Image 1 (cartoon, rainbow, N blue to C red):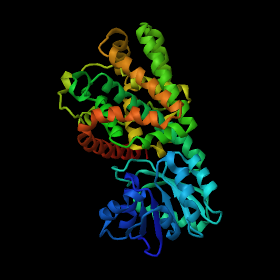
Image 2: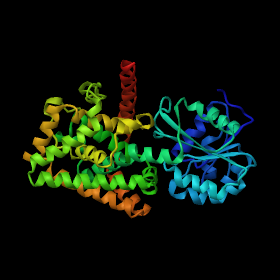
Image 3: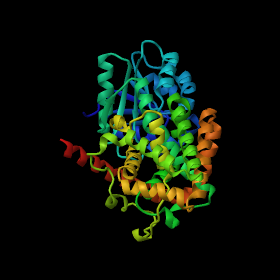
Image 4: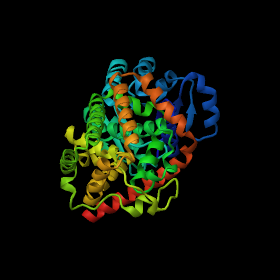
Length: 436
């Protein structure tokens, strides 16, 4: 649907997602009123000068007074403060919503600070700002809205060409915890461990090829973003906290079994978890194949130089899903590209018996990855502690150290990561068509 210039969409917070929303919505013909912190007003005016349909204002008070649908695209940690400052200025009869990844506190903030004559319809694009939104899930939460208001929001958001998914705030938070929280924790832990070992993994032969490409590229992709993108979901979502604690526990317990050489117990636990997660997928085609995985290397090392891997991060992931009673396929409609790639990597390992056998044998009998797995276990526990303490500053500091270490390769990783995501989306479509 083409936009209407007489309808004004307000965007409070012009970070990466706020900018994406502003540009896409304005390009469709809607009038966009945008703002960020007042100290960014002049630079924001210069950036968007001459761009049709985007009007920059000094603060959220000005945006709230004149906009028909106001989207708060600010960090989850700051949302209550920002809504308290600008919410009371909301235009009579307008609609408000947010773009945070944790909706329960977001809705509470709106109920607390927004006038009762204002409707509440929130949203959440389940992808990062560098991903093409077409075909990606976009959650819409109708909390308090007339049919007319809800239809207007759907019309505005339809410009992303995303898959609209209608959920409650509670459903959204449970599903995002199931699909994103532990996924992020796994990649954050890998990056922390590599940095602690002073490793650029694409330069080390044992990290080359296959699903190692998934681990490396997506870890760098996460660290190339801003820390608060992940902190809000992890710290403010109680279900996420529980799952991240379990992931750390799974990594620790499995590593102890490896150290103790308890091959049978390790095998029994891993296979039981694998049956729980993948048992109903035995007749389905694998999401990832060697020819797909091998396209996306940052190093170009030949396949014959690869070495086996204990894959503790993947083993802990499936064990965690089992312990938390999560079947990840149940939420595939609301999954992010990153989650689908991570699920594909775990599936690749667990649904190929010979590969899983080699992984278990290698973990017990070979010490090549022992020091790496030790650092990974430390890292997983450290991230769990930061989340459990609810300390945003600690989370930020833990995030920024590996981020600085890996920064020189972010451009390459983003480019390759986008190619991976595009490929996996096409692969998902092909598998779905084959089922029909």
